[in-house]
Length: 414
Image (tube, one colour):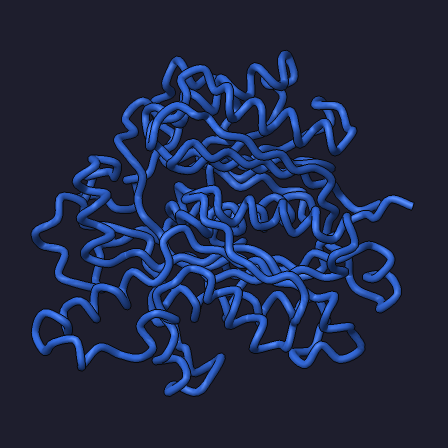
């Protein structure tokens, strides 16, 4: 019998809410969390705004001393995982579960950038003998997954996938396949990012990838609008609990949704620019539908990658038109990055949560700041105000530097 994969838990840390309920409430009310950066002196930088997480209290999740030994991205990952485990009804000791059948793939596109910066400064000022012995495990991207597996005693498949802004989308998809092929019954999966640091900002500013609309932070990210001039960096984490259906039913879990398809591809074109005709994106979507075995016109909602960059938004629109044909005009689309900013390696996971909440609540969150439509972006992007709609199935696609493409398909559980 084919193994079906369902979602039984979710957790979120973002600039617009440090749990799923607060996050969702902000989105459907069109509240932006983008503000002037206060993490460091932003004066010399061209872009001065970001979706930073304010007042994050690591002591809610672990002793402060233990928290100091983790980079901020790992702290975020653990916080989101704790919420996901709680909503899934799974104890932190995995009581009643086989630990060997519980795996973790929680990824980061960049990893512990702040830890590297801090220790390079110490190296330059005080020499190599003063470097923290925790530097390496703080900085490497796999330690979000490693720390989560240690925290709960999960001994199943454990890894991190680094595909830039597609990292957590690939993580969820590969977790789906691990359950399908019986490598695991439960997967803790998603992504975390904490790159609002001087070097992170300097790098993206040098690429001219980020918006410079510093005087109006809340309006700075305007996906699909003709005035769009780049993305705004966010931070945080999204974590999902994926579970084999019969396993979930046996323990009486509350099933939130079902994941039915996953596709991955490469542009093989350019290190940062997407392939102009959207061939890679289209290929990943086609693969997801092939595995799902559902018609394209069954999709009611698309949470867009929607980065507010000139190339991405135009390409993504083209991909939807190619895949969905006449149905593209009926498809309800939104880019919630306009509220929570671009969370890089965590974006696919946090936006998968949006897809699931849209199905649960029958509400499409808006694309805010959509005021002057781009003629080349002419689909229904749910402008500025949330709308009520029946959502039985949703699509989530993300693209990453290096030409990485990943697509997930979700359905209401029936």
